[in-house]
Length: 299
Image 1 (cartoon, one colour):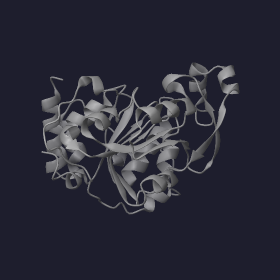
Image 2 (cartoon, one colour):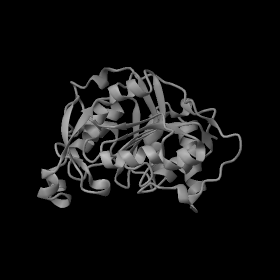
Image 3 (cartoon, helix red, strand yellow):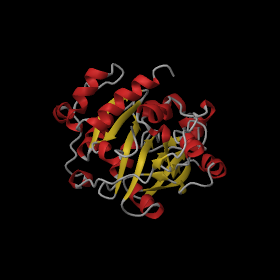
Image 4 (cartoon, rainbow, N blue to C red):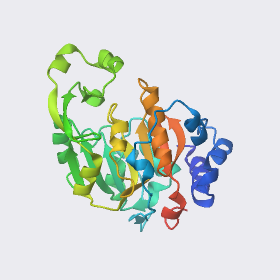
């Protein structure tokens, strides 16, 4: 907590006052906690999978203003509301200036029961934000709709590049996942044969279709939390970035699949998001137009 003021000043000065074309350079020189060792140029020279067939690369990103507003009175954030596993909620609140913004929106994929490890919980409870929560586990989903009944939408589905049926393995807690997406090393570490044998068939949907049904076309989310145990790249591939935008995106990195991590970074940088850092198992990206989107809200 002692570093919140310094971190907030550093990040907000960069986000609001300077063009994003200089962001990587500035972050390298202003905060030792931010790793920008891999720039977009380096990614292009890497062995990342070729993405020439990705529709999102040809989409023109539309700049949209947030529907959030400055809170009428100063909000006090109770530490008991901070539920993130690796302090992602604190990062959003105090580094990106969201702690005094009310009425914002979020998209959280991998929301579990809506409370445990939820990156959006504090925003919903303390700042009156609402959003779309997507959870594949039937068990967690049943708890989620009781914990978070007043969201824009709670969705029980997996997310894929195309609509299909997949096999969902219930292993308990945050290590549930789709058999088809889980690397063999992950399966060997966390799942036994009985759990795999008892996998449930779950409908896997495209995120484009889910968003079209829940928020319609042309929508802006203030942040996007993506943690779905190995299926993150497929989820991103299913987004139509000409119809939806985000202020901040953070995606769980995959220690079992480094090529997928490169592909995630390549995809998001190609559609208008700057890679900021690899922090606590997640890759963080910020909208290149963050300053324009939040210029009237964050000071």
